[in-house]
Length: 220
Image 1 (spheres, rainbow, N blue to C red):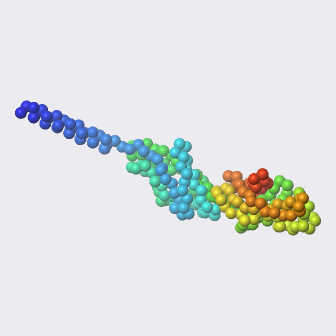
Image 2 (image 1 turned 90 degrees about the vertical axis):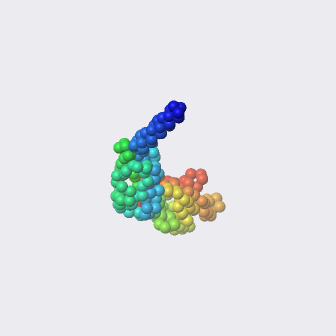
């Protein structure tokens, strides 16, 4: 009979300890304070999150008004964020978001929204040649040197004849197209595939046809 009582006492002790542990862990507050997803709803754009630097970069399509974009933000469970998800926000300059964990610890994220660069515009080479890219055709508007000037003076072509054509976007800062060349020995024109690569500032691009190419700077 004594043995049974001791066993019951032991069981009661184990149960009491188990209940106490549950209460302890349930009272322990979460320290998680991360942004796990950042999406612009309209137009749809997904942010790239750097969890080490706590930086989020979003790129939206050309022409987007970024003064009142609505972000959809997913954060750690039990955490809170300011400004809150779903609030129209002006992203013309970087915006800081504060994520606060349940235990009060906070993390600050900086969100930058960039508008996708467009290659449409007026560009110039360092030799004085200018090209106007509008739609899918880039036509030269000024020729001051080189073989194109010779051909122009000889009447073999007119301003606007030499061009980059069939321009199509392949990436955020890259386009493909065809560049017009002239074979001096055979005296004929021919098209060659090329890639147009813009810099991150959006004010310069290079035409690469596999053997190098001209660099253009935006003038308008």
